[in-house]
Amino acid sequence: MSDPGSPTSRPDEPLDLVRLCLDEVVFVKLRGDRELQGRLHAYDSHCNLVLGDVTETIYKLDDLDEEDEDAAPAEIKTIKKQSEMIFVRGDSVVLISPSVPT
Image (cartoon, rainbow, N blue to C red; front, top):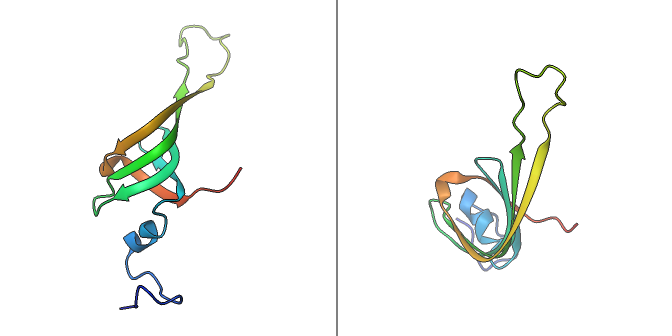
């Protein structure tokens, strides 16, 4: 097991990588075509997360009228929401990544 204080320490478990992202901005992909970007304040072994200053992006597919053959192809709508603080249940988390500056 690595010494957590040493500069050359390597993560021993996957959640050690999440620990390195504490108090940093992270990108979180969720089930149900949702994405979050915000500052990671806390997490646990179930991947429950507490995020602050969150931007939530929801992707929604416009319904098609199946009877209308001349209808335009479905479009993806993007809905963005801002939240000061959010709790994310771990079973909906697909991916946690350090956020890339845009």
